[in-house]
Every structure is written in structure tokens, then in C-alpha cells.
Image (cartoon, rainbow, N blue to C red; front, side, top):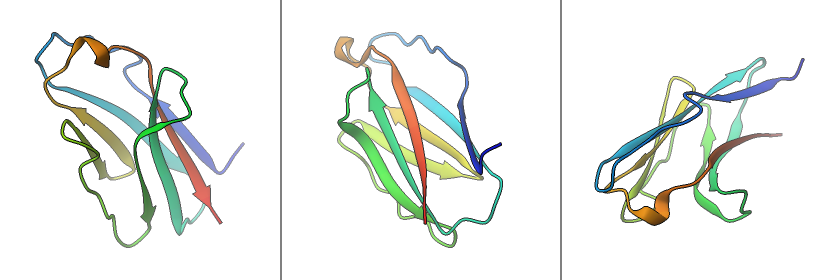
Length: 100
């Protein structure tokens, strides 16, 4: 049993061209945390599409580009994509790291 568990639901989202999409991941933390690193990647690349560092008392969030927005509420991270394009299709992964 680890101190951190991340799950993405639903596992697949279908979006029509031009529509908006929201991808979510739930973060379960078994112990008190001070700093989490949250990152979204696409198609197994090491390049981070959108990311931030979260501390337990404040959440500094900002847009991650012209069409990407990161949200954080009650241990749930949301990556919002506006005006979907053909090149946006792929596998998105939410990575969370507890920093000590």
C-alpha cells in the first residue's frame, strides 16, 4: 500500500472536432502532504503538456497554453481542452508525484 494513488476515469473520452473536453484524475493521499507535482503528458512522451506544483495551503494554477487549462479541486485534477483538433487525439496521462 503506497501513500499516493492516482486514477483516471473514464478511461476513454470521445470528442468531436471543435468541441471542448475535460480529462480528470483523482488523487488519493494516505498521509499528510506539503507539495505535489501534477503533470499531464500525451502519447507516452516525456514532454509535459501542462503541469504545476501544488502545496497544501494554496493552488497556483494558470493556463497551460491557448487551449489548455489545468484545474484542481478537492484532490481532483482536470485538464480542459478547448476547440479540439485532429492532432489532439491520443492517450493522455496524469502523473502526480509527492515531493518530500
